Image 1 (cartoon, rainbow, N blue to C red):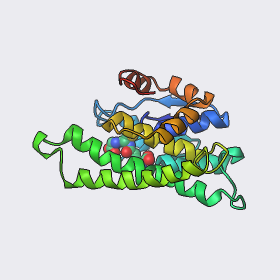
Image 2 (tube, rainbow, N blue to C red):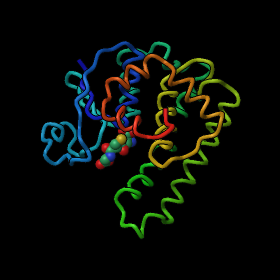
Image 3 (cartoon, rainbow, N blue to C red):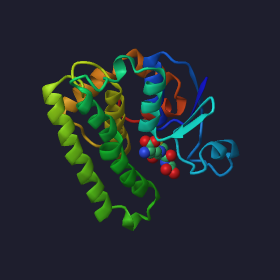
Image 4 (cartoon, protein in one colour):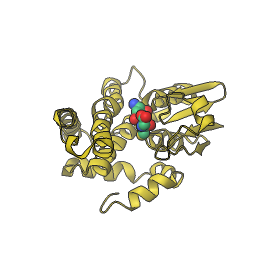
Length: 215
Ligand SMILES: N[C@@H](CCC(=O)N[C@@H](CS)C(=O)NCC(=O)O)C(=O)O
């Protein structure tokens, strides 16, 4: 059975596995407590970040790469359009943009807000990172004006990638999404796979429950 280390962006992986109907177990990793003592996890990912998976002899990090691995290894099924599909390029673009252009830049702001000395919390770099997020969000909005889901009419792994990123921005820096994005998140998170994954993520569930007005 696949072991998924860590919540956080591990949610993308859990959601995908729920949609694919594949069994997995979640092995919690407490980043806030410090991973230095967690020698079992450090043996899996010496760099100490989450998520990671162990699938037989395969060990992997990077949430989007893990999703691509799982879809290629056990799918793809309807969650990943094949290269001959008209939506393939859009799918690939937003699958990666969810992390590279949306959630990734937000990391810089979150880390600065939590870890930087008070006087250094608002700086050029956080402004730059927010600008990157907003410019990519513009592409998301443009696409959602054309299609109900990010790569067309069908729910795909790119929706998992982008939905996670939009919620990450909402929940961590209180980013106010527009109506089009809010409606989109409502659509994608209404899925059973989302709810099931959330039920396997107690720390995330508790954190989200503590945030006023978040879904
Ligand atoms: N690009 C990576 C980002 C991973 C990432 O930023 N993980 C966070 C938690 S969601 C983390 O482990 N932060 C601590 C660290 O990077 O040391 C991915 O998509 O998996």
